[in-house]
Image (cartoon, rainbow, N blue to C red; front, side):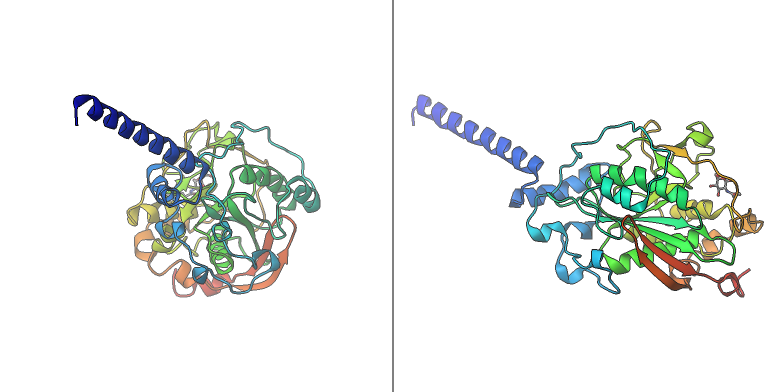
Length: 361
Ligand code: BGN
């Protein structure tokens, strides 16, 4: 081959290379279900800081989906991938950034009407792409209907814009007895996982309203404290290890830590106990930047049945010792009522303080 033909062959190869690269980028960004798309999907989960579905999440077979007692909105538990939909874009296209928050409550029906695509029981998955994250939103709750209405009015449109496959689980502690936020979150995790193959859970206080939709409720590589900047604390961390409010963990992380402690009855300390579990399990708390992790707290009086827990200081000295036996594997509760509302699944639970603490304090 003379030099001129060699040069021509080289040029042709170069053009083919560039064309291949451009095609690859186009299909990857559009999330087309090509072989390269599938490879990119896994790779992207590793390289992007906030898109970290656990490894089992990216390859799914119907046989691995859970069933259990399944209300109508959970019955089609197949992921969109089984319908051949493309993966949703890495960055959801309709995020706004800072949000104008709603402060008034609306009826459940009105909230559902404002959020087309929302299924009964507060389930949603994007209609035209496969969500990158299947997230159970767990709200520990008692007697705060007004706050729940305000929260869901704000939360649903944001989660829909974030293109998540999600469900809202309100875990309502029946009277009598002291409120146990951490145990309700454990129960919410277990009940959500029974119903669908969620990859992670976001634990959400009922009185915290997100102010920025770039605060993505995705499955984190490391446990994530989402409510870092709350107006009540002048949008600053009151102390560096705080983990209360809104937080996210993957299923595997939560199981490794045996969930939250069940032993914190009344206000305070259960989140600090979890922060210690996170460290003992070898994880690190991560946070989004403070201008994104912003929340407004709905003002309210202290709840009866949720007075400060005087045992919390003593309990916090024994986190490491308790961790293996106090948590998901020591849950005891009953479920008198499951109610499928247009905006959420309400699971009423009965827990008994004496039963949980017997022989342990
Ligand atoms: C802390 C509480 C947390 C609570 C934050 C913010 C305790 C344990 C004391 C050693 N911790 O003081 O549970 O989330 O305030 O309100 O009370």
